[in-house]
Length: 293
Image (cartoon, rainbow, N blue to C red):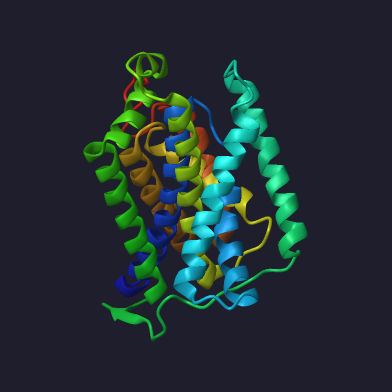
């Protein structure tokens, strides 16, 4: 394999890794505030793509407005999900909450099939034009959008958590919810915000990738598994680790195609997930003693 081919696979891995990073961030944000794995996260990825395509095609909205509307609606669905399904479970039993998220995933998927139909939907790329040529490899303009959106999201989250009172309140809630409540933090609002924010991140990944791969009502589950594997690989509970895990997983997938076969692509996430859980459950960047950030 020549260098251009290897670079092409690297571009593909970084593109997929950026999407996995957005989903892993969603898993991490909800886990940090509640201690629960939100298995409905993949459905927000699906909603991002389906809603953007629907708003663009059915209502004729300009693409930027359709994209912003899709993210906003998905975030709203995340907030409503927390209010109606998570919050009423006042004892906060993690197992019960995880089962609720699984039920939420099934419900959102079923409703999406009813609203959007069983067929794949598509939408145009954000910027029209020929792919760039870099050292003999082709780089799609939509890939630059995916990287840019992920980098901007990470920068925005860093600013939110470190420079704003709201972000510091979310961090305090993540470290110790009871102590945060004692010092005046509205922990219920923080949990609700974490679900809305996680849903927005998932939707952002879905709408960014839809012009390249199309979207179906049942596309969320498989991507959610990879986002979860990325979060575990990096170290569940840390936003930085989630991004690192997403990028590493994307590259591993792409290299498995390059050096083995595309048959094993979807198995990589499962193998990585099991390997990390057996050998280093705290993840690549996690500490032996698990802490929430």
